[in-house]
Image 1 (cartoon, rainbow, N blue to C red):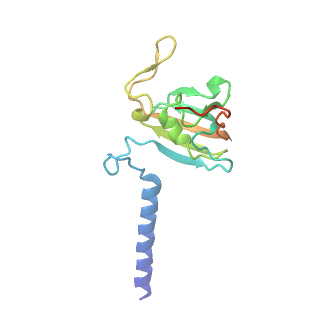
Image 2: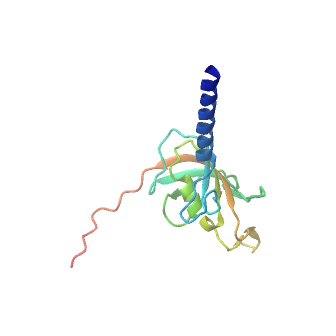
Image 3: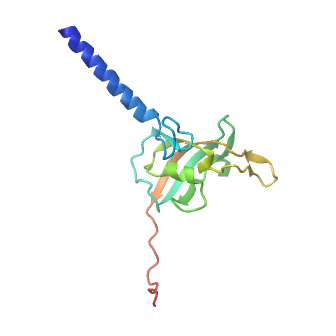
Length: 166
């Protein structure tokens, strides 16, 4: 009887562990994706969970980052810009969608590793430097190491603007 109970416990633990592994590393498929296909989804892996303010749409975030191609080639980094954090308003144009999706929900002090498919990056277009050299080839998946340094509240809408009249 004891062997039977131990066997059942082992099977339950394996099932729970398998479910956890699937949920943790299996990736979330987006609408239209085939099961198990994360090709079209931004993937994020927590390296360090932050403990400060959370990055939410509209907030101003400051991040340090390293951007690489899948072969490890660094195409951009905070270090290349004097270690000044990249500062932007989450959810506004100007920063690729995949980067914003990956930063959303992080907390100050947190670090994430992001894999951004071409559909959430630059798609089928090469990104070139000022001399015309390709720094990011078309259809490239981008890999970012991101550390969230600071979150500032969303700026308040201007007050005193007269209401439209009919």
